[in-house]
Image (cartoon, rainbow, N blue to C red; front, side, top):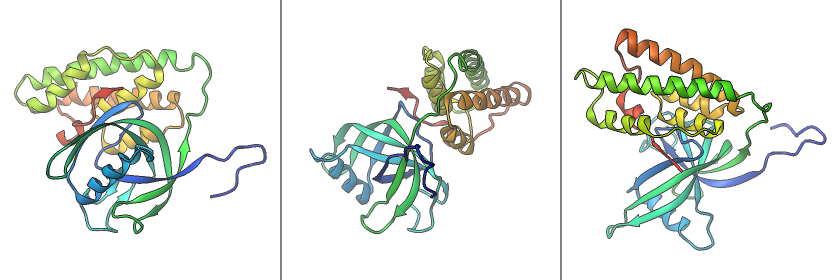
Length: 248
């Protein structure tokens, strides 16, 4: 990585635990997890220590599986920290945890050896500034299209040929909730809840600022609405639709 230009502050860096998942976490979005693998049981116990920072990095898997052999999983380079908010232990050592997306980061280096779980040296990413009012119009358009997309999905599900009741119920809940008026929160909620592919969500997480993320969502929502309304097809597998739906 090249040195920053004179007068430019280098991004803050940290070494954090990494938790590869088949989904993308966004800031402010609630992510519940069931922890059963021994390496992640250890991680949760360490995060519960009074002196520990109760935070780990969630990063989506580009290639491979969550439980794949070491060295076979390829990760995306942009992830989101998950702040540990609630822990429910089981007698057999498993945990149910509730986390909330916090800061975005870029992975600079992965350490697969010092702990049973991955650790990464990361740089923290800030949203680049946008002009006042730049997001106002596009955020209203995104909110409108998101509502239309959710309505189409609900209508499609009632025909019996669409998504399962489980997936439909989750999307109905988010579609009927009041959308945030803050453009940044709206951009994260839509990115997590709309029927986008994993690659699309990853691109949205990687967007440099709110305005760019909203513009991408506007384009993607138009595509999804066209596919659902004209082709009566849901464009991504149900597994990718079951994403965290709550906002902190």
